[in-house]
Length: 483
Image (cartoon, rainbow, N blue to C red; front, side, top):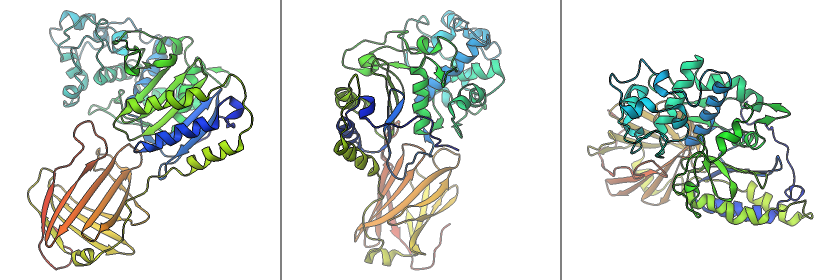
């Protein structure tokens, strides 16, 4: 089951890590909103680990673009098995999907160019490609303005083509192909991968795994593909995939401008990493023999990574450090105390009593929400929302959130914790925390007489985070009614 421990545990001092430096790192990371988990590995042993409740060691977490490094790994296996070569022409594998008259640049695009984000596109075509029903055909139909191999542009759709390539040459989706080759040797269980409309794993994102799954993946690469004495990765692939393959605008102070490998970023301090949107990190520091993993829901990733350099690096020593029980106690208390609480407030209010069971009708809105009813039942609230496509009923916890399964966010069922509270006599705050992803939805309803205004949105998003404002009116004093 997910959450299996595979790495040994150690005190920080035994591995030459100052526990007070780790405490400062965790403190700084927690000060950023929505740290979900952190794990630090030194010399192959976990020296710090923590999950902010309700996140936990056995919960999967969406990895976003950290998935790309796993896709690259699948390509490495396919190369070692003679099914594809990094210098193969892309169109040689996609003859049926190619445009009728491919331009010269597309004809010269190689698998290597997909791996290194140097496909030759002038801008990232992913949004346009993913808006279609056939992502492979759409990608190959995009204009290629530059000579492949000469121009770096971050390109998630290009990674999807790698996923499609692996599926084409192996007859298996990425998840199944990696199963016996990578996941089983590393003890990764229960991983999931979202798919395209045509049934190909997304590749550039969509993989979900646990914190320790990410850590063992990073440790495997750090150990040159060897796990428990066995060569799991093809010999030499780890070094080739993580070395500087292409420049992308070198700058001494920016971790995203230190070059790129095969779906791995190069970073400062000799590091390399897989990383995903909103703070999903697998950072490997080969010279320091360190792997750092975080899962998060943060919007500004640069600062989060900078905290690792600021607080962890000064705390590393070449040999064991003297025992520091007080330092370990501070670290343990900080890690054990990580939690993300629902909104604080009262389970009810005079306004809540007045609204109980009454229908709020909303003016026409782009969200398609028509009516809502909030009522108290069995010690928690029940919220009924009448949407133009369906009626949704959810239980809402007070001090303790209520676990529900919903397909509202991405079309497939996922766990969400729902909680609500009256933070003032006229203000009700509803929180939906998607506990296998970075996302939290907050909706704040302000009541003035019979007028209701609802404002809110996501904590992070690839576009605007604010949801459209809803304006409604309390229309009746009857039992629950929607329709």
